[in-house]
Amino acid sequence: MRKRQTGSNKPFGARDGTQEVTRVRTPRKDRNEVLATVACLLGSKRVTLQCMDGVVRMGRIPGSKKKRMWIREGDVVIANPWEVQDSKADVTWKYTRPQIEWLERKGYLN
Image (cartoon, rainbow, N blue to C red; front, side):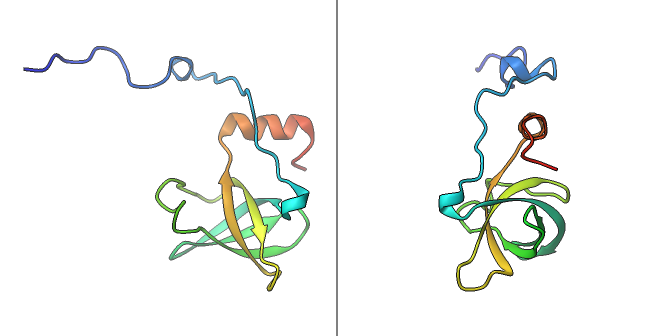
């Protein structure tokens, strides 16, 4: 018979609610990445993105990231606009709350 586990499965820093940000992925200009905020969920892996360059794009969550990345309205993500059609983009990264606060302090978010 298995012993019951005492305590929590959460990491040590997550118990008190304060997580320290050590590294944050920033958008790379050489890869044509931009920061974007999710405006609304359209269903079927599609979202509407309000990008920081002023363009509203339809975003697509690739199949490899669909189950790993749960996206809600208001989340800050990295979008990679298509070269063929500038009004569409792929969502490549989602930020956590401490990472968003770090981006605001450093001036990446308006």
